[in-house]
Image (cartoon, rainbow, N blue to C red; front, side, top):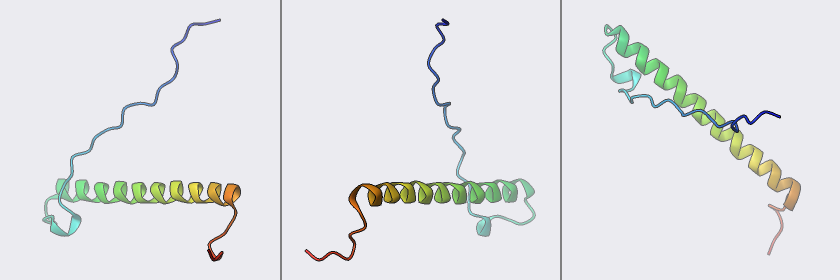
Length: 72
């Protein structure tokens, strides 16, 4: 048997926040590129957050049942 170390998640890369695409000078190609990439990353984060929330809600429905119409 090998004595390999357990696998760990890699460190997340920290991206510098830049002004939004609407506030960037269109002739500054580097700034436009950075703003566009930031917008794409932010969209992915929102999509993944929504996916996680949906998974948790589905798990809750499986364990607790769908009772949003039940009156107390």
